[in-house]
Image (cartoon, one colour):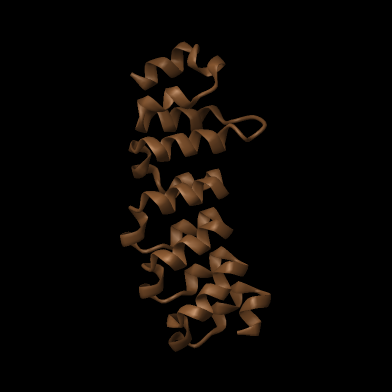
Amino acid sequence: MAAVKINGLNTKYLDKKFRNDKELIMEAVKENGNALEFASKALKANREVVLLAVENKGKAFRFAAQEVNNDKEVAICALKQDFDAIDYCISLLKDREVAKTACETLFKKEDPDKEDIKLILEKNGQALEFLPDEYKKDKEYCEIAL
């Protein structure tokens, strides 16, 4: 257990039988969310484990099992931690709360990427509501939102 507390990615060196040890994997993903990659299939589908992983590294969402990939709360948590997690929860952007979180996280960046704004609006036109006013006045964004 000490090895994964120091570096969660040490889980890749564990025997497969230990990759299903919830307590051990929880310690690993707490230290480094990407340790989820080396968890058992069952733990990759465990909501509690995945939430802890994405709280640490939003992009760890990519290692979650399909059962958790459709979990709105997990997606929101991942997006709050790292906007780039959007690549793994695009289908959930149809949800108002997910789209709102994506916009809020994106606009915390100094210079939000125009393509990211378009992506959000293409998936959920109502997200226009969550953009700063100067973007709401942009004809291109308004057309995409319709």
